[in-house]
View (cartoon, rainbow, N blue to C red):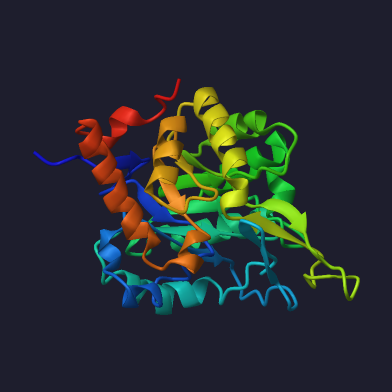
Length: 303
């Protein structure tokens, strides 16, 4: 009898608890050269807006100790490109697709939800109200319970798809925001997005990013992410997708123990394109060694 790795996130049935973090996997085309994307529990694609976004000026990525800063600014080709060019490719794999949606206004989020509601292959929407790298929208909505609730309600009214609200660590108290998202109708939560940071070149005495600030990701943020996942899991009763510095299977197991029902691999994809499938295999190996037959048995069991 094998180990059961399947989990349920809203109405999304994942064959294993591993997806990829939005913005670190593109739309899957490049990664399909390395392995069969059907092995993943789900694919979370790059942030998608109504119209194309050009993103921020260069330079917009900087390597840091145990991580990286990015200020991409959610560059993307818009929802029409996703529907007409990206989704036909992704439908060739046996894997649910979660679309990360971004907007400058609540109306844009709602319109995106309506446009994607009946697109074949789209299983869920991840509402990005936590990106720190755009000048308006996104993080603006995710810093208060009221703003969070307003966006989630607007999206919920336009779609029957599973909704996952992505939360920001760049707030004073995350728990009221998490509860507001749940009360407004989100089916699940994902956390954490990147932490705000900057980098300076001491020789030129200039900021390394054209945007000055960027989002810090990678192993450096894992302790913060683990605590926030643990806190939120104890405060709400919806599935959680945990992320933040997961580089191997044991990192993923820590998030599951903290209360995440599934996990997302992000920056690790840049270091090792095989990391997501290695994490899947590693979780299974861990459960087998521990004599545990179902991955759900370890969720939230840290003491």
